[in-house]
Image (cartoon, rainbow over all chains, first blue to last red):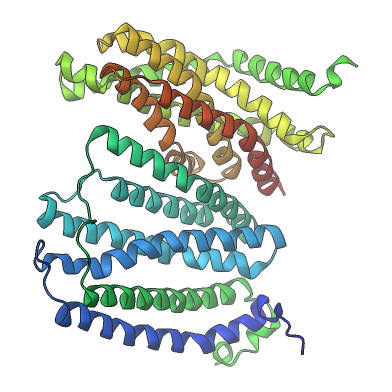
Length: 245
Length: 227
């Protein structure tokens, strides 16, 4: 039996599918959050060096990983949209951007909260912190460019090009910041040398999965709104039960 | 016709943009005056201690160069866009990338090169050593074309948008950070007695990468903005 893989690349069909998937992702994300936070705050022991402060890692590291990962996913969707001229890909890229920016912001914020008790400063010009900040700028640029172009087709294509240029630049920026940092000062903190407790690892990976599922659920919800907004003049939208009522 | 070769075309575009810039000299001068002014504000802001000024000279000059190159980017395509020349360029049988490259080159000669020539004079105000000044100028020579080329992508994407200028800086500045880091790093290396070759090589690598990729990307961006 041949499966039509492209069936759900049309907003018409994807709208319903996304609606059905959101509760599953949201529900499993909530459960994993509860489990992960329980292991992280109750089961996992205090760190012998950092005491209780280290527990912020359980949100900090997943947020950082997702902020970087989501930028790549966004650029990939943007590239798909640009190459195959599919409307849905561009909508997905637009829907991912705010969530990615949110995770980048959370990562910076929790990093500052962690830095104060550990390093004695809210902000250290560490390579990782600085490149995370630049990543947030890249997200904001994408969102700003998309928002300031009125024609949605042009907005999609222009911001897609920007996302691709940005993703090519991300490694260059990362390494330049890293080398800049080693020139000015030694590496501020090293995580190596201490092996993590099993419960800490478990908590971190479970919360990473929870954040991931949360991102999927939120992006799907957002893409549904974007579809409704963009296709508001089509008949299939006006025939939707939730629009009619 | 002797102008039909690719290089002839390039020369033609560059000459046209240079002539246009010379007819509006005030625009060129504004960028340069902005550069001088921003650099001169720093000692007023942080105090006249020569030790500190010498240390931050390269950073100040590079950031000022970055900001003043942002100022003139808005003009890169807008005049041609408004009077319809850009549309004709896109219809031309010659490659749009090549035309765009000509415009980038002209833009650098008008807004980048004067900064490079002005920088040593300003560097003297900050008491930079002759060796550091030399490296600064070489770094700027390699780096300012990259700023013009990366900036051109942003200029093409924001063509004809309201609030284009601020948006342009928001898009382009993060992408220019590596240039800033290697440019100031080269001067820093020389003043601490190390070799600046590695930094300058990386700047050269960025220049080569931009030379081969940005004209094409900018041409694509223009096509998106003009359709």
